[in-house]
Length: 174
Image 1 (cartoon, helix red, strand yellow):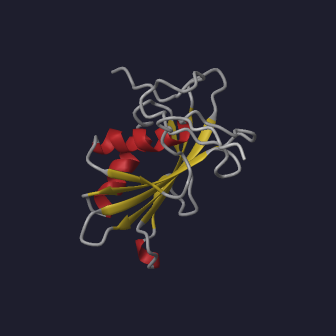
Image 2 (image 1 turned 60 degrees about the vertical axis):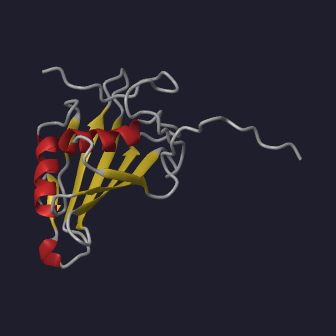
């Protein structure tokens, strides 16, 4: 099966799906911090996310990383009585000529009333990546859509990866 396009490319703004939330320097370099909510409990959520990471993700370019817990992909923190149940990390490599690597990290916590809250963070790993053309947002949302289609809510956490401005307003001249 043909995998989906997982790279936003060099055309600005990108025309690739989910590449419109470009970030410039929110974390020193380009990054994106999002919070997702889903209906599944944390143990099922981690199984699904870990499954897609270990099968290289929807575009074949994700690589689960080795964690302090001694596993790759996601580690189980439930026995440590932390406010989250699971923590995970992977790298995503773009398909363009530069093969940029981004770090994608997640925590999965119980949601009050059932379900899970998944905090996702993606950051360009190469120094000097001030703007990302939407790649860090796409790294997170592409994984979520692969597992849950559109059955999740997403909100920005902080000011990273803003949606495109409807119209560009010049600063007032004073």
